[in-house]
Each structure stands twice: as structure tokens, then as C-alpha cells.
Image (cartoon, rainbow, N blue to C red; front, side):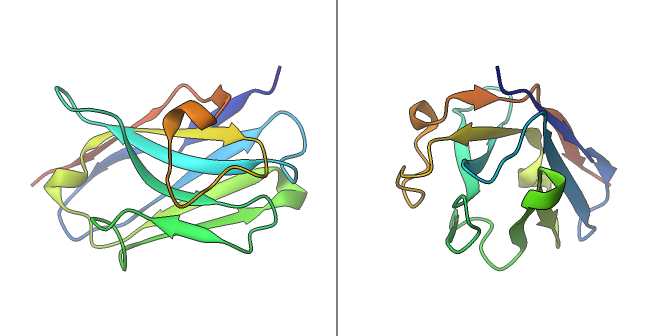
Length: 125
């Protein structure tokens, strides 16, 4: 089974930056990867996703212009660079892998087959 491990979360002040990493146990070049987040009492929401080749990306409106998703298939790793962080970005962030032909624009959680354990991001003064 494909295993995904997130890292890079932590506590940061508003306006600060973090870079999350998602590393897989096997080659990731045949998987689309999505980043999702869930805050206490809220529904899980899509944050960003990237196609298997890295040629297509998608972002939630709330993070567009602040977050950047990228991947290095040679390292079996996908990154989420988060800049200009806001308190409302506080959540547990998960990476997930799905088949390469899924529609990344919709960021549907049920289309992703494998999930990491999550990493906590807290934005606070």
C-alpha cells in the first residue's frame, strides 16, 4: 500500500511562511496529489492539487496567490509553500494521492485513494 508522510507543520505568526512536504514510499509520478485541510468543527476542504506530471495545478480561492504547490517526482515528494499565512489557515493539513486522470480542478476528497497522517499548522500571535 502506498504510504504518505507529511511534515513541515508548526506554529507561525500571521504573515509568516511554512513549507509542507509530502513524501511517498514509492514513486509518485503516476499519481495526482492533493492537499486538504480540516479545522476543528469544520468540513475537510481542498487546498491545492497537482497533476501527476506537474503540468496542471489548482488552488482554492482562499489561498490563491499565497500558496504554491510543486512536486519533485525524483524525490517522491510534493510540496506546499505557504506564504502570508493567516489565522484562518490554522488546520490539520493532509496530502492525498489519486489516479492520474482525476479532475484536479474539483478537489473531491473521495477521488483520492491514499492519505497521510496529517500535520498541524497553527497561525497565531
